[in-house]
Amino acid sequence: MKFIKVLTLASLFFVINTSFVSAKVVTSESVMQIQNTTYQKQQILKMVNTTAVQDKLVQLGVTEEDAVSRINNMTPEEIQALNTQLNEAPAGGIVGTVVTVLVVVAVLDLMGLTDVYPFIRPI
Image (tube, rainbow, N blue to C red; front, side, top):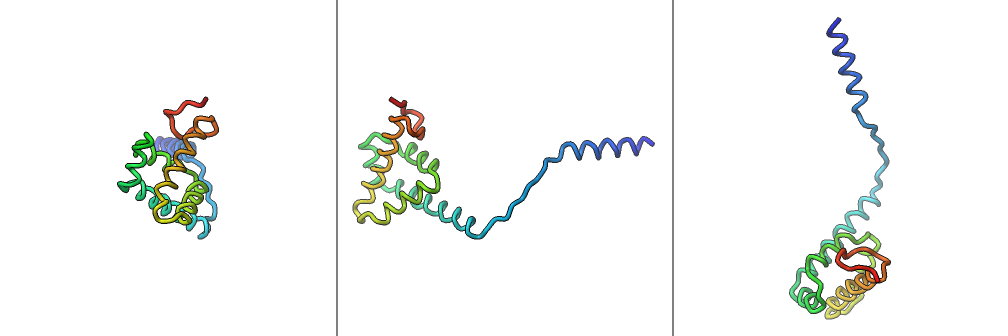
């Protein structure tokens, strides 16, 4: 009898503590889109690690950590837009494009439209 009580309590405990699981179909397209975004983000981060980009960021007063943080917080749409700009820019203009994007984001932070850089207070 004691065994049945213990078994019942254990079963009840198991049923109460199990969380409900839901599943959905993951399409190949969504997996490829996530992988593409991850790849593009890695490429942008590699570019930020170059000496030329770091020198330009220092001139503008942006630390590498802030730039990396901003890139890591970008949405897939923002990454795609930045990647498109980088692909269309001339070879020497890539640094300018990256810096321009970071400055635009800083201005948007100042205007209160985004909250990417925590050290920037909106006007």
